Image 1 (cartoon, rainbow, N blue to C red):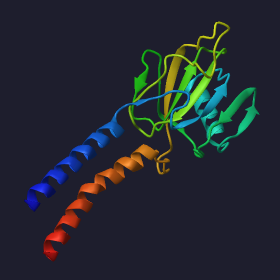
Image 2: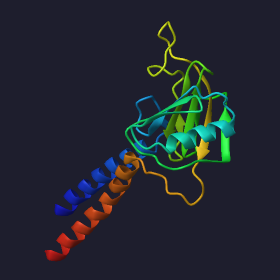
Image 3: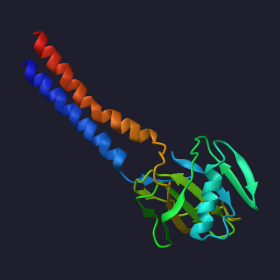
Image 4: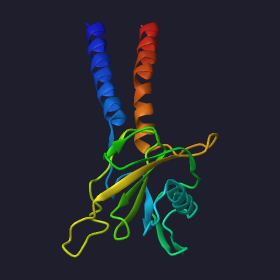
Length: 191
């Protein structure tokens, strides 16, 4: 009787762990208030890969909850400090889709000089970007500016990226079955 009770508990725990891990590995659906939001850049023009890498490095150098104006661009960061740099090596711009993967950071460019840039830390995960810039920036009709393109950028080799909280939770959940197996073995040996 006791064995089947443990077996059912272990099976239920394994199922919950697999579901939560699958959810943690799903594509990130990014929004202006998503975890991983680094900050914004206005105006973000010109928008070549080299220019955007420079904007991102300026933003990453600010620290958390900071604002600055540099060379006519307004920078603002949010509550997490993603201090670091990016490299143009392996960078890619995409003008035809809202999703991608394999980059440490993704910079979304909204409507040329009218909107601005939004930077997220995605840590290599697959992501889907919002099609417009609302609620951060809207036009006179209160509609967000459309996505012009996005640029994927990576930290230079040898740097340590900041892990996202969901990644740490998923890792901890993966350890639960080992803990229950150890506990089960200890209880068996006592009886």
